[in-house]
Length: 284
View 1 (cartoon, rainbow, N blue to C red):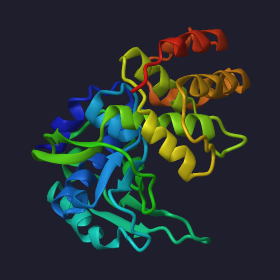
View 2: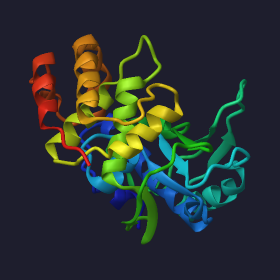
View 3: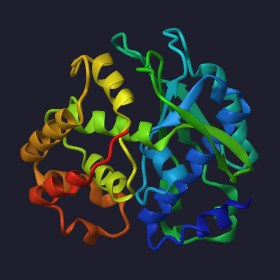
């Protein structure tokens, strides 16, 4: 597919929307490179970008997050770099990619993929971002793989049609919800609230997607955040109520607004709204 046509399918209204669309196009090309290299025989896609690309979440997302299917503390993304670079070359872009060197031992393997050129046809044919095309150079995507993941999750094969037709192994929606709930309740950043967590919570509940309690418990126990022998629905509800009562609405709005096309959706947000919203939460 021509990159110009791919970009036009997003109908970007301004440069910021165009860059968000270009980042997502780069994410999908990255998934193609990983799939062609056999990556999804060992790992599954999860997180906000998986929810966006395969399940219709109506906000942009930044990172590509993966979980190994079996724990392997020695796993590295580096063997897949060649396939990623070649996949971008196939669609007319030069990229660089390097593994992030950790200063301390961690179960997460990270790499950063960066555009070193602008897509040639965007220069030649003109686009909505002509005036700031150079800003695309240096556009980054972070790839992260959990080498020692909490298990007890379910996956399914999801079809992507661009840049060619292929399947990606993804967490199922209830298991994705479990990961999001864990992040929302136990995220370690003390001074930074992620509005994206709350936007996604609203999305899951409005779609009627149930929370997989088993995988949520596995995540909470694995990180040492919460270790009841059995997780009851009401326990999760009480944690949620306490979290809602502690958040800053201004902070979560500020975090999410640049990722969504219509900020009016946030007008209803209040603590009382979220307290009422979670009463509609389903479990499995």
